[in-house]
Image 1 (tube, rainbow, N blue to C red):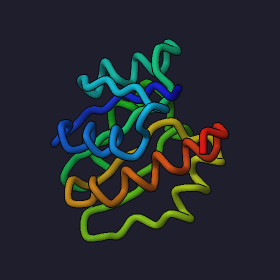
Image 2 (cartoon, one colour):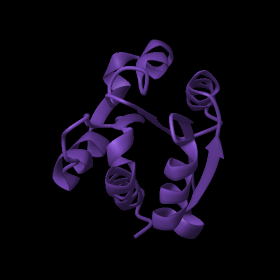
Image 3 (spheres, rainbow, N blue to C red):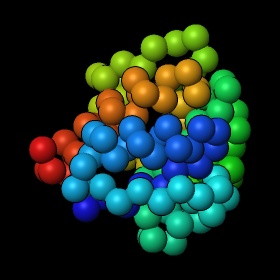
Image 4 (cartoon, rainbow, N blue to C red):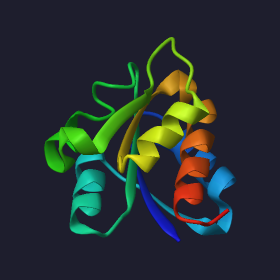
Length: 123
């Protein structure tokens, strides 16, 4: 089971999207970005997903500070479209924190969860 923490704006939509795509393979915890990143760092969660208006600022700033820049990536910027292939590459590279623009939550989260499930052999 993948343990995913959700922070940032519109956490309820992100949480719903994670659960809808991951089903029994995910456990979702809604928390602040600070607490979420700390949980990942401590090994109490596997991945962090955050959302903000731009997808790269507040969605990931705390996670970058706690988890390191190389472990984090924006997957959907404001005005952009998430791409499944790019998200799969990021997951395969070992990224553990993902930033999304709020306008792309419902499109990007399923791509992230499918990529994570694939990486862990859960699909």
